Image (tube, rainbow over all chains, first blue to last red; front, top):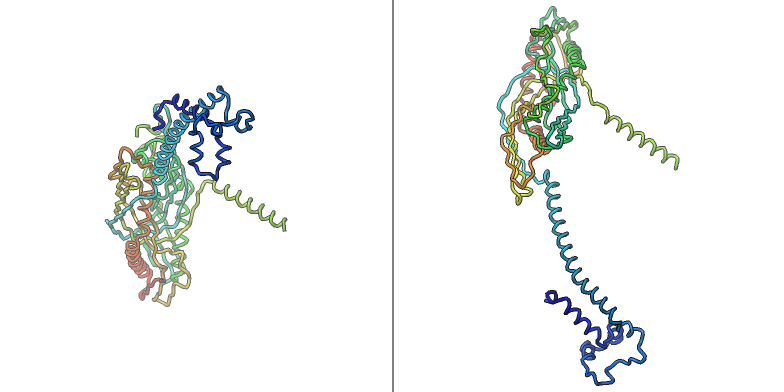
Length: 296
Length: 180
């Protein structure tokens, strides 16, 4: 209720209080043992009573401070009124700050908790079971980086993916034939080594940088580009030759352990199919344009 | 004493430097193997993610349909000379236990079937989607029932493969067991 009153009238009230002969601090300190009621009664004493009036002849230094000149009193009053309005302002600012802090806290927590409290349910069904005879003889592992960029009105959006891939190379032993030439010698006909798998599982991809919203299909395209890059590098590093050499070694060892003294392994090398231009066709490779269309 | 401490600190710093240098290098390497894959399972998996952290602000849901291929077989590198006993036309072969040799989830086999994000919620980032998919991959790897089934099939098929191979190599009495 006090806050609603006119500040000027407050000032006047304050003047009256200050003009009162009560010593603001010294008296209250000296009469600390006295009951509070007495302290309040003192200014209410009749003005004519000489004992109730302070002695102006020899004022104590404290009393002099408590009774400042009029100009000074005005300053003090205006400062205190200013303090009152300032305290209101301060209160508003503090409330605003607290609200802002709470809002910021909620949003930062939301951002942080994005990955935490999630519900994941996974169900799976076996759709196919296949009998295979694959002899994997070499693996090639590589980490590669694919960067996608597209220009928007004022900025460039980027997506940088680190992909770790494994290329498994070996033989399809369902096409293998064996021929005994004697009790302890064998001739094995092996097909040419093939790429059995290019493995880039979700756990092998690391989204290093992501600016803007990228469609899942676009991301899949870039993941396939990373796979193709890894496969190209594997072939360039001679993984097919290594797989063939190691396969022959391992099979020879296996047959020798079985008691064969002579093991001959022939690996088929079919000529790669040729395109119309006459250049060998690299089957199974994904070719991507050098510059990506930003629309994809 | 002080000198020793100083030497240890220097050695540790050197080690740190070398490991940092290793990280900067391109990781490319080849591993020679001898894995005989005998069975391939194709698994269809549904990965559901429902982010209920800030349900007050709305929902975030995503559903993936993923096709994964698992291959299991025998690691022939684990075989030793003692694992093969030959006596005339009889052979006793001890094979190592089958194991999962490959799990492959091709990017093309990941289908985003459904996605719902409320207006007040931020959309799933690619990093978050990758994490969700990764959890699905882990679930396949850690599925003990599936693992047991596939390894059992791998064992049966490996036995069958070696029986045919050994018979065509002239053996009549064939005993195949697994190193359990």
